Length: 323
Ligand SMILES: C[C@H](CCC(=O)NCCS(=O)(=O)O)[C@H]1CC[C@H]2[C@@H]3[C@H](O)C[C@@H]4C[C@H](O)CC[C@]4(C)[C@H]3C[C@H](O)[C@]12C
Image (cartoon, rainbow, N blue to C red):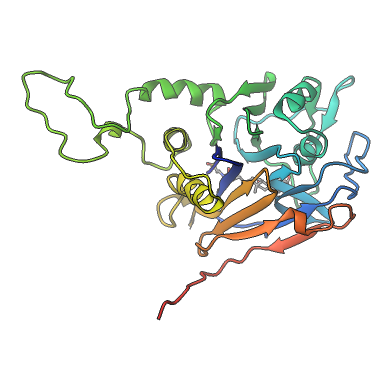
């Protein structure tokens, strides 16, 4: 399971939890402007916007999970099993494979509005990266500081939804996830009032009772509701420290602790949580065992070059002893 969100204070932030039972050796990866992006069915982008994000680099190609470009446009792919349906190549369409989708969008566009226009002719074509890296069933969130959309390639075709929550989890389809929020409109961050019965002396005996009923389990639809509630009600100061702290707390509200979700004989855990300051191009992350925030600044790399820069994750706990 995974959850992605955005959040705005003075700057705009975008990130995700990557929840899985194993890792693909992902690394924070910066793609500079002149790295040649080849596409299987479309012309290469020889120059493009620079990109920073989490990727597995295979045969010199950055397979991005989530990323932000130098203009602040951001995108993440999340698991969408049983629903994702990729298509054969189609004449008259722009045929992009799912593993090329993030580079293709972030390489060219600055805003969600521009991306949305390009999506009108997009066909997510069913071509594996390789036998060792077949396609994953994914759906995507694309965000800038003003709006977010969700993109789903399903049996009926490519669907693009406005996403006013700025949050995405996994199954079911986004229209169903969004509709379910109606069931929770009574939740509140304020103490509840007794509307149950005037004849009963009901007591607000604890703080937080206004949100009793907020899902706390780790299923995808529950994480969606919990993350939307937490993000939409989040309050933070404007500084970088306060903003990223708040962001990691939002993601923490839907993080997976080892032992709580069985996947065969393993457990799903939050392998990493990311938070990119999309205005500054700084990608912060924590890992399951490293709660210290680590950052990579794309502007410290040679963005006019051709070579990828990859930073393997610092995974061990960093303990700061005080005495
Ligand atoms: C499994 C990951 C998503 C995590 C997630 O959503 N889990 C939820 C599980 S569930 O629904 O609730 O069951 C996805 C996100 C990005 C994916 C990776 C990226 O798409 C990049 C490449 C793409 C290649 O085609 C396959 C390997 C891969 C390296 C992908 C492996 C895997 O599918 C990743 C890592």
